[in-house]
Length: 601
Image (cartoon, one colour):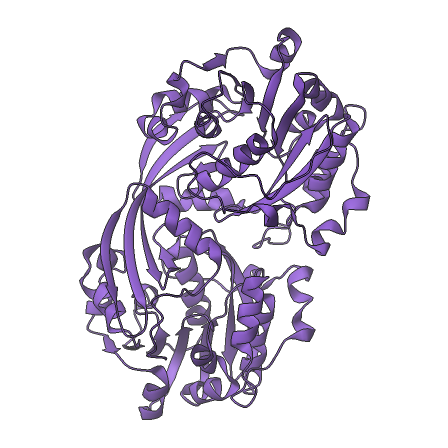
């Protein structure tokens, strides 16, 4: 690896930086901060507050400001006046917090869609702190009636209407996105006023997104659409609507304090050709033709872990069970079926290397169980294991669950990482003091140097190296390097390599697979959803064909499916780019360039 000074740079996408800035502006504790010749290291602990409604994550404190600032402030920039504001939804007062930053706001009517969420917000001190006690502001009127009664009885008009609806997954929620309902909202809007509503994801469900836009236009409203990436939720879409033609003026500035908005929001109003391609198929959702919830069901991306002929837990529910099985505090729980609310607080320990998120304790187990157990469950013998990278000790923790493992060589170049994993109590506790196990030998050196010195083969080789973000790291993903590792593998052995995201960097992902295949080994590719990172991919490589049928993990784990073969199923849109991938070799070293191109994209 390079010994050049990279302290002013970062590896990874810009959203790691945005999320890190959010955490540093909120309550946090720095557990460790330091520099090595290789990277900046920052270890943080924060309290993560999460609200679940009907076991679906509604928001979490890690990045809720990104969402709520994006929901509120573009509408306020476009609106001529902010005197009277109507908020629908937003039971926790997080959009309300943003609205009240404007001193010319004199009245806010707040209508709840989930009475239990409103009760939770009012009874939970941590949420009151989060919304900065916005419900106690004298300008705020909490409306006791439901939204339909409110629309029948209230005759006032509003300068800004903020609609924070649930996504149209059900027939009942779909009625909030009908021409008739949106027409009633427009009747409450002043001539110069602005309505903003959240929408479906233009990336995951573009047909639903454009159908909501078309429905707004059918209610005699002009629209302007935008989107923002919220790290924990992905791409979130929004619609601005008004009675006059809307145009985003890049010269207009947001003149109140925000913690996540870029100086220029112009990029938010651009949509890729792929996202726009379905716009002509959009429909108008009306009470006489209520189809939006059907579109949502038909066009939502299939579960990454879908198993044929078996009901699969949604990702939110799986993640919730994972959190509940670990250390947590229930701040609030109440309500009935259909409006059940749970507020959790969990400790989140996060490691950033060069400002790129390396792990979050909330879900690192999902990643490391997926990295380790498919290989170790399929190999016939697992006495000797080599781990390249993985200095945090989490992969070792999983390997040590197998009683027949006799020796593990951990090779990591950065002494700071090894120090943190061994000696920082929070991290040592998370990895089960793995680096102190007598079966583990730790080698602080370059893996390329280490592999030259070895002659005794390994049953399993786990490659958990940093992403190929520069030319030096790209050399660790070449056919030549993988071939040398292959020479250290027993005839029945298995190599597993973390390979970035098949969703967000598919050319990187499949190029790594192609480079592994260039060694002559057989390749099996798989992936899993890691909330902090999105869909994450891996490749298995072996000298003999692998049988994936009915593969199970027989050691304790919390996050893997019962049948591992479900991890090896990819949506067609992930597979479609494989033909254009690149075999990375020392004579044609391009993987780092592909990586940077996909990050920019």
